[in-house]
Each structure stands twice: as C-alpha cells, then as structure tokens.
Picture 1 (cartoon, rainbow, N blue to C red):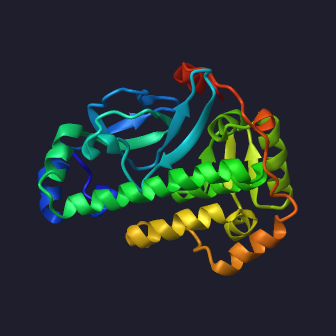
Picture 2: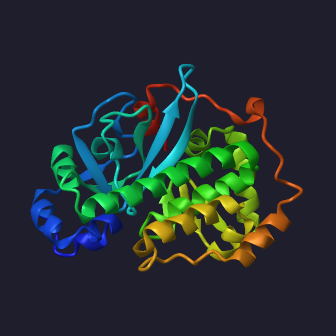
Amino acid sequence: MVKEDFFEQNHLLREFPQDVQQRLFPLLELVNLPLGKVLYDCGDTSQYVYFPTDAIVSLLYVMESGASAQIAMVGNDGVVGVSLFMGGESTTSLAVVQCAGNAYRLNGQRLKDEFNRHGALLHLLLRYTQSLITQMSQTAVCNRHHSIDQQLCRWLLLSNDRLPSDQLHMTQELISNMLGVRREGITDAAGRLQRLGVMEYSRGHIRILDRPLLETLCCECYAVVRTETERLLPWVYQKGRTVKTTHASMAVADETHTSNAHTTSSHDSITTIQHDIQPRFSSAG
C-alpha cells in the first residue's frame, strides 16, 4: 500500500492525471535503494521504472577501458527508465544509486501501456524526457569547458534540488567518480567551498550552508538546466526549498570565474573506475 501523501514525495508522480493515478498508484511498490545498487546496466532491458523520493540515481557512461562519468542524475523530480516508454527498451548508460534512499517502483509494461494511450501522460513524460536530455547536454558541455570548482558547484546544486534536505551523504572519491575527475581536484575544490562558508564536509557528510553563494560561484550550466526544467515542468520547483537563480547571479558568476574557467585537459581530469561499479560504490564510506 502507498501512503496517502506519497504523491508529494515525487514531483512527477504528483502531476500524473487523475485517471492515471487511479489505475497506477495501487500498483506502486515502495523499495529501498542502497548506495551503489545498479538499477540497470549498459544494454539491459529493465523490467521496472523507479520514481525516487529521497534517493538520487546517477546515469553513467562507462567506456571499454572502465573510465566513467555521470551524464545526468534523477531524484524526486522524475523517473529512472525513460528508455522503456520511449521505445528503445534499453540504453547504453548505467543507472546506479548515488544517494541512498527510497523509490516507488512500477512495472515498466504498465507505464508503457498508459503512455501508449496517447493522453496527457504521454505529453507529461515527453516533457520530462526533454528536460533530462537538456541536463545531459549541459553536463557534457560543463565537463569539457568549465573548471572542477564550477563542476562541483553544479553537481551540488543539482543534487540539492533533488533531495528533501540540505544534507547529502557522499564521499569525495564517489564525487570524483561521478564527475570523471581526479579525487585530489575534488578535495581542493571542496576545501575552497568550505573556506568560503558555502558548505561543510565531514566523513562523507555534506551540508549546504549558503545556497545563494553556491549559485553565484557556479557556472551558467546549472541555470540553463534549471530554467529549461522550469519551462517544461514548472511544478518541480513550486514547493521546493531552493532559491531561484537570477540573471544577475549568473553575471556575477561569469565575472568571478573568468580567470579560473580554463578547460581541464583529459589527462588531468579523467579518472578510471572499474566496470564492477556496484561493489566499489557499496564499499565506499
């Protein structure tokens, strides 16, 4: 059974049309998502879709060499498994739990059946998929052209948007794996943010202290993703904790980081993780 207030826990589920809610909500199953759990691997056809409530799932690309980088993240804003209803069935990415928590699980075929009714749900899921593609595209640009400091700020803001609190549990090693950079770079960048009073970090626990300053220090990539999400899915942030990014803060960020926004070379920025990513994530503290 699903709690009465469950639709408040995942923004996408909350916006399902009433008739769809009546058909699908009794079928939802609340499941625990431990850190490092792989929801689907590259080339797999998943049987389920997942609607996170207080967990974050990272979508990663893993190269033949084992090198990996995050292309997008999904939290209480959406659903993991868009390939099921988009018709591709499988994908070349890996979905692994980045922040432990819970999610509502639904049989993928049931969601496909509703999607194929060509009603309001189809348009809702297509808009969500477009917002996810925007996040993927902007992540690729950010990873190529912006400093590690800016990438970390973007990653923290996107993570913060998708969690119910200002705290997250994540080691620097795991963050470096997500961003595809060296751990030393994350350590240095996190240290600078701590000294500025933006966040505090201790033993894998991160707490955002000054979100407006964090937005100011970030590159334009976060604002691009958020603005497009607000255009496509305006209800995502209506009940959120986050402070809306303004063009003024974007201008300050550009001016502040002009001297630091050097492109990081692939030799210095790419770190390797093993393809057996689940045990490595699970063993991290």
